Amino acid sequence: MTAPDSPSVASSKRRDGSHAVENAGRGPVDQLENSLDPELQKLAAGWTEPHLLDLERLSPTELTTILDTASFFKDATDNCKRKTDYLQGVTCANLFFENSTRTRNSFSLAARRLGSDTVEFTSSGSSLSKGETFIDTAKVIEAMNVDTVIVRHSTPGAPHQLAKNLDCSVINAGDGPHEHPTQALLDMMTIREHRGDIAGLTVALVGDISHSRTARSNIWGLKSLGAHVIVCGPSTLVSKQWEELGVEVAYSLDAILPRCDVLNLLRIQFERQATRPFPSVREYALLYAMNRERMSRAKGDILIMAPGPINRGVEVTPDVADGPHSVILDQVTNGIAVRMAVLWLVHGAGRRADTPSQNG
Image (cartoon, rainbow, N blue to C red; front, top):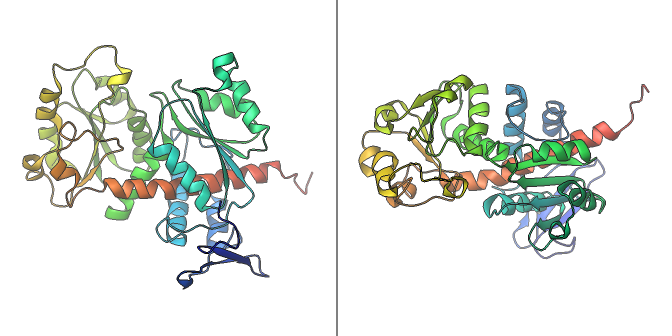
């Protein structure tokens, strides 16, 4: 956490409760206001939940509130680069019981961009190896005066269990194959930035659908905001039962490609599979990899997305991953913005819930 007299960032509180942020190396920068900002007050009014556990139960209004708040913070922090004090004095803990690079670092940066302190926990070498339960470990972390817990776990529903047993806010950073709410939110933010309204777009999720928490969260979020969603991949990874969620099921990328506005290319999760779902990686790439030849048959303004990590030559060829239609790195930046929004919204809702009503 940068000290107030740091040479890079200085913050001073105005009498009206707002905060000015200066970059001492570049001189004064645009004013960043705290939660008294009228726009933030309006956004806060659209969110009442102290947790973010899934997208399945969120309304279009709640989804839009998160996306609008993310856009606010992205602008306020100069494309997620500057530090502010919107969550100064708040402590966020990353409880990751599965490996992560992007999500963990993104949440940590988001918290620090808002002025929050962070606690980093990994299960390896922790008291879990001594017999401590998942819930007890989380309670110990919470007892260190933590305000928000960000949890990733291999068991579906683990964040929901924490929300029932902790007093602080809980954010789901991925629970097994169930959901990954902030990944879908950053995907939707990226689509919205490049294409405007999500309603009416055709978005295809291509790859390992059966094991993908990203696919599930995207389905709930995109459908709620009015997109037509297609899930596409080998029949061993895409069951016809997905149609029960109101999505189109397809087994040929070439057949659906001309209709797609967005392709979200999902990694094959071999680590979650007991048997190989197709004869060879080469065959999968032949049928489902997005390459130069397929790009020539796609819409001229198609967006190529991938939640990462990407396997070049499997889901997408290097020329497409690095090409003009790719927004993969935009997704990474927007991940920080979305997570800033979620951290700020759940903390505010949790704080309001803890405040006794004046009406008794």
